[in-house]
Image: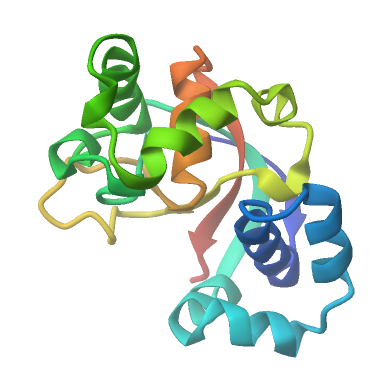
Length: 179
């Protein structure tokens, strides 16, 4: 993992909410609405547990190797066995499914991954509010899964699509637990 600038928790909260809203409305509309929200409003949307995790971490922007980070368990309706390892492992299975058996892709993954692959703006990772959010320090979300250096907290479909497109590293917001 390569770390750069320190980021405040409110920026991570904004990125989380903007990315969620961008699934339903244009990113420009989502950004305008969310950037005008108070932190209290963001907290109501995010939920207590995630809010506490975001506030109790030291955040930085940076890049991560897709081989070092694990996807969310069952991300986007993918088979659990596909999300047991790293994003790279998951992307390899998804790429094969896209080419030969697209019916294996269920729920969100069936339309989200191909949609992201067709969106040059997402593939270039120029929009900072759409960076995946990565938690480091021990794979706490991935019980019974292969241990990775970090786990995706948000942005699994985006990260998997980026890996399917051939990216070896992706830009992300990276948390480390405050000591």
